[in-house]
Length: 166
Image (tube, rainbow, N blue to C red):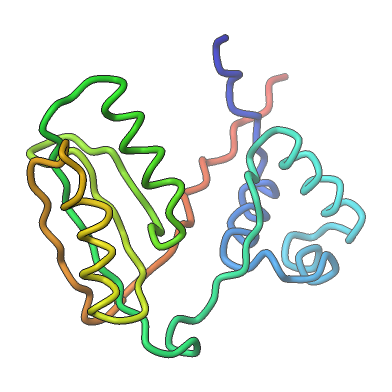
């Protein structure tokens, strides 16, 4: 089944979506003041974004330094054998582990970039052993431990508003 085209966005949509990406916890009244709409009009637009699939979900972003020690690591992974089934199995394992924050299939010398969150260096090492070393289909992996998270986020660039047709 072909994917439906992206919904048409006006200037208010673009601004509202950008505001929501940076803080979805703002009140409807506050968002309305920022975009020049009433709270109920903002609520209708947000409902439309959910219906159209523009908003996939809303989450709370926790502050890692407030939770105690947290080790973040980026792992570069190359599979030994590649097929749709091998990639499916690897992807499912990454998706099922709560310590895997993000996983990207990439082009180039590596097949995947995986972002891990662990409670300690020891925990990070054990996690790497379990996820990658114990997998006979992982040819090679390299772990890069994060010293400092300089910038994190998932905000996407919002497309420019499309001109309306006469």
